[in-house]
Image (cartoon, rainbow over all chains, first blue to last red; front, side, top):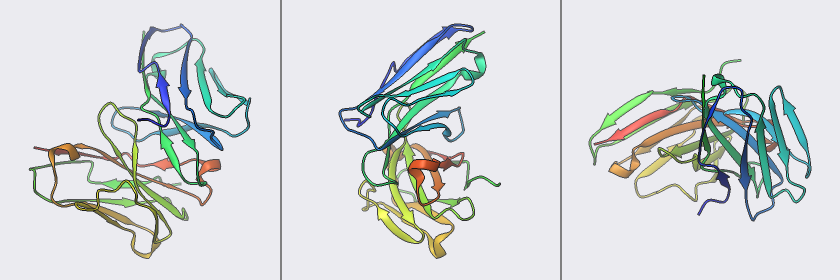
Length: 111
Length: 115
């Protein structure tokens, strides 16, 4: 059983479309991170959210941490082929270095 | 700054053979992690070191997996004997003491295929 459930598992869209992916749990997290992983590479940190209700923007990416710190979302505006990859959320539920990953959302953006 | 270095990038072995992976973390990072990522899944923590001490190895299959971090810097992960289900990407990551705020830096991983 995954501590963090991500949805959808797969997403294929056309360039220019908007999309939202979700990360949900029944556990409360002290902080949550989003990573992007490209084939043959390790995950790369996109953002860390710490405060319930927090919203962070990174160019066309908007990250939100739920008020209860149990869920998070990632919204991409005007997706580009370069956004293609596996998007992983990871939460810290225990100690400061006790991070658990979700299974990820595999995004494909077609030109 | 140099990233997390891992070697080899790829390894193919037969079941029941042994294999070892090496990781050099970012200089100054106190915490080092080994993750296993099976195809289609998110990374699963195998073991976490802080300096040269083990913090968490609860998900490490200790009957066949072992890891060490000598002198609190480089680390090796060994599998002996390997099983078919060990086929996966093995990722090494490092972080400062407070990884929750600063995030983890991952290496490119070692893709292991057990045949």
